[in-house]
Image (cartoon, rainbow, N blue to C red; front, side):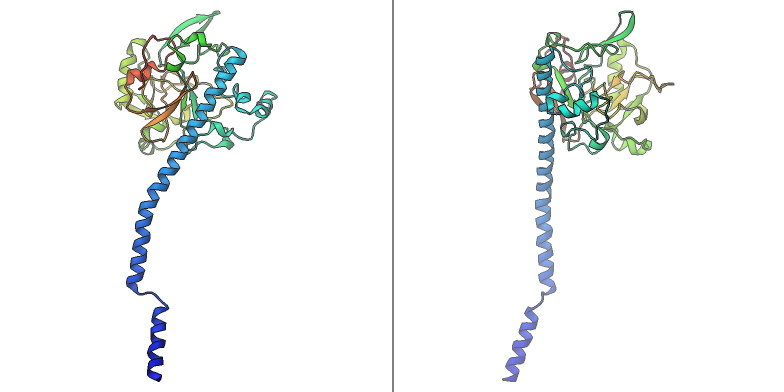
Length: 321
């Protein structure tokens, strides 16, 4: 009897724990589950971020249309502040108009997949379409100016907003806003910047400032003829004073390049160069067109088709299908 009790007691003790084999099996199952579930969770998160950014751009498009219906023009003079009342941000608009300092960016200004976009810094993850990078030098009222073929009419007369009549190419064929990553506020090493080249603006091998050198500049920038980058001259990240947006010289997520060599002063015309649409979405970026529809544009889009979609009056056919 005693022997039977001893055996039963030993059996119970053995069942209280796990064998090494059982532990290995359980760990293996957990690893397999993580391998299966992890990518699915990441894909779901990525899809949610992309959807959020699309919704933001759609709101931009609707706000711009509402602004046009109210004032008869598109808000390109102050492309972010002007549309605040039409983004349910009337209180914030009032604070800014009275000279106050806002505490943060509205949620609609931040793309959740933009890692350096911080509301507390008044960042904005989107940029206004400035055209295909070609401009006409002219004189308006005795002042030198540059006329652009995107949403903006002129570099020096920003108070002159564009109207629907300025888009003979069609509202559905002309981009309005696109995603534009917020660049770093720090100056990284050249090696570090080379690891993420589309996050910075680079100087090309020589000056390509002449109009007839437009195609040569695009080729030099796209094919990697770059010397140095200067991220601290990148466009301002705050929607409060950010005026210039992005252009259609090169397709989305291409490397950005200044058209000439390093400037000697900070009066450098930063808009002369490739300022591409950029995002961290896989293989492309979201764009809202003037008629309000949003489209995901692939990085591999034909360069001339993309260029055509950036002009309001170029006479091109921009078939993005």
